[in-house]
Amino acid sequence: SSGRMMLNILMTFAQYEREIIGERIRDKFAASKRKGMWMGGMVPLGYCVQNRKLVVVDEEAETVRRIYRRYLDLQSPKQIAIELNAQGCKTKRGRPWDKNKLHHILRNCLYDGKVSHKGEIFEGEHAAIVDRETWERVQRFMDASPARTDLTRKSEYVSALNGVLYCGHCGGTMTAVSTTKKNGKRYTYYKCSRDSRRAISRCPVRQVPAARLEDAVFAQMSAVFRTPLMAASLAGQDGIDAQGLADVLGRPFWHEATSVEKHRLAELLIERIRLYEDKMDLELKAEGIKAFKEEIDHENRND
Image 1 (cartoon, rainbow, N blue to C red):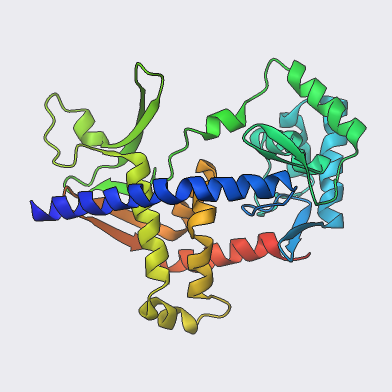
Image 2 (cartoon, rainbow, N blue to C red):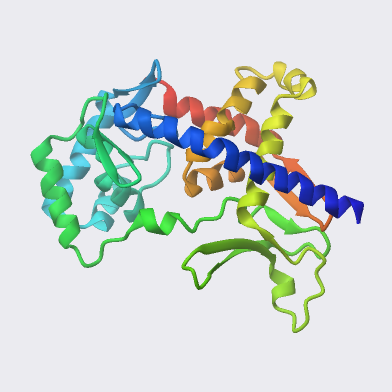
């Protein structure tokens, strides 16, 4: 139908634009990383952002140092999480600790005054929170731990739209499914979960390439925040700027954001996406816009 053709055209253009601008953005991003610049994203515990640079927050930095010291004593992220939660200590975003969050802190080279990009480590512009000897000792212990969890590898398979994407025909969730071809390349699709359980497929949507759909969804979200109607509707809400939200969802952030960060954005901003064979209906969370703004502010402000 003409509707399905239009959806395919929109998704194809989103993919084409991503490929055209992607290389230029990646080159600029890599050059900035080599200079030691912090390029945005979720601000880690122990830092705030001033003039686009990471600045140490003393109280939070002491929590980070305590985590490193306790790991040298216990060598158990799970036990450290139990201690921190018992003491009422929260994460940067005000949530309880778990072993995975601690693993990420213990492996984050930002605390050693470095920045990383695609496996390469560069000297950062920001100040280190953990001294070099402590950092290296912790890494040696973690490298030797048989129970360590490779969160970086695991995060590659977190799909941005899981939990908010639904089949427009049957109302079932659409979940990400990955396959690896003979050439070793991995492909991810969103499929109707109800239809996948049927002996014979009856879903008109069937499966949709994940990257193309995600690009189309977030491009549409960014476009919505740039409309005069959205700007006017948000003007009365204290501290919320539609243009600022659109910029956060802009191309540089979207191309370099991790899948975990993309999934978090979807959780905050999207109530539901109904996908049909010829269109998609995007429903945003009214309260999610404010929550998103508050989370960004919480990460960026000085305590």
